[in-house]
Image 1 (cartoon, helix red, strand yellow):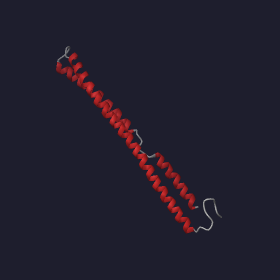
Image 2 (cartoon, helix red, strand yellow):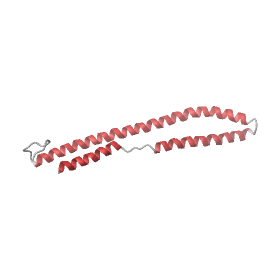
Image 3 (spheres, helix red, strand yellow):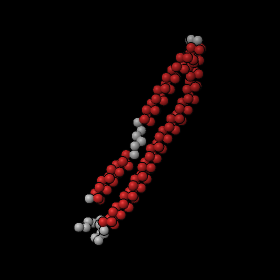
Image 4 (spheres, helix red, strand yellow):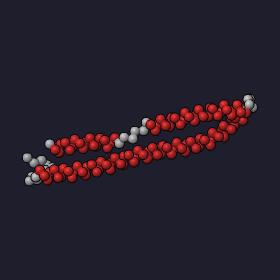
Length: 132
């Protein structure tokens, strides 16, 4: 009873040895795949964090100028300290909302190596078939 993958005359020991070798190779390949996939996810997170920082820096420079202008305009209609307080409160609220949105975007990033999990499931089924 020989199938296409097994040469006639191979002992059970040889077959188990080949299965162990194949399984070991497969596990090493799966570990490499997991590392690659996790590295890609980490790079994606890194890019998002860097863009958040750059965007924050540019926005901060622009906001400083706009805030100064708005405070000066409002100071014509109310006490200068009160105009600075009002503008500062509004800018703080806007900054909080923007930061919260980006933090939520990072929370929704799925770091699970989906492709690796799927191939591990397939490998498990393959190993079961080899043992039958």
